Amino acid sequence: MVRLLVLLAGAVSGILGVLYALAVHDLKRLLAYSSIENIGIIYMGLGAALIFTAHGARTWAALALAGALLHALNHALFKSLLFLGAGAVADSTHTVDLENWVDCSAACPSLERCFSSAAARSWDCRSSTDSSVSG
Image (cartoon, rainbow, N blue to C red; front, side, top):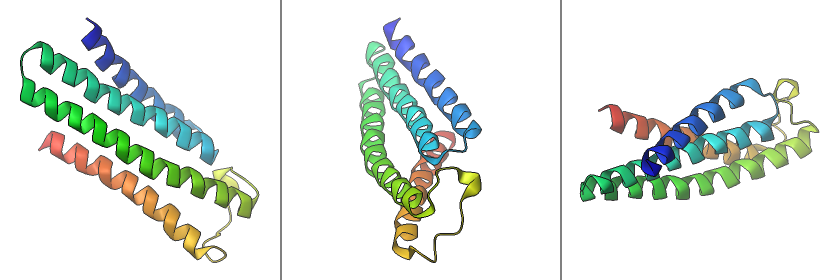
């Protein structure tokens, strides 16, 4: 029962994190809600590992646990860079409202490259995870 609860809590956290992130216009809140979604994905991996362990599928449990741990490491690396970039962009534009941003890539080209790299890395890991699940 606890195993299934961990899996379901992860799914709910993932879905709610995405829905809340879609509704905000504040960059730092958007990143925070995205973190909630990513923690949900990590919990889903942990829940799957627990369920596989209970059913004696040790190989699948190891793969699910490895996926959850790798996603946690990846999230820690790219999200910290995104928050750092968000703070720098907010300082240079004097706003965190995404709708009021001006083009700051000309003023801060290195910041734009770092921020874009972290955002692309975040998307790349999710799309590769999604394709491995469906394929």
